[in-house]
Image 1 (spheres, rainbow, N blue to C red):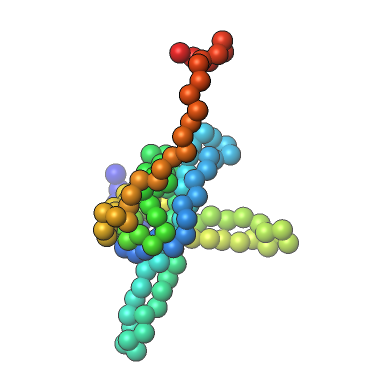
Image 2 (image 1 turned 120 degrees about the vertical axis):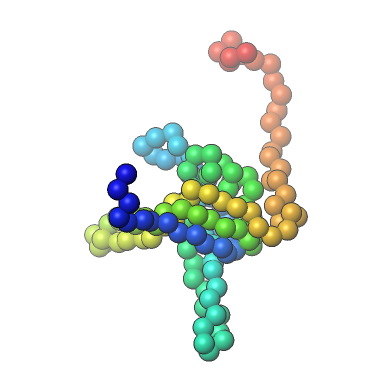
Length: 131
């Protein structure tokens, strides 16, 4: 493998949006989208906040959907990728996203209590249902 370039991002920040999980249109892969905010302090002592769009796929997406909460402190590691599309007026748009390879929960344990899933009703299997 020839390593002449390297695309790696590590961010530590707070989740600023609800985690949205969905299934990709062209495949059965699950993905999760959310944003995190990072802060920098400059010479003038004023913090400057940057918001980063994050996307996770497969098992990582399921992990994010289950454990991440708005306001929670996390570390994400991944790759910077750009997505292009044409808006309704036909103007080409671009957005930067972090494609997650790893998510680390930071902060307090109470911040990451498991979301309670809605109870499913028990029923007997029908003729077409697998046992």
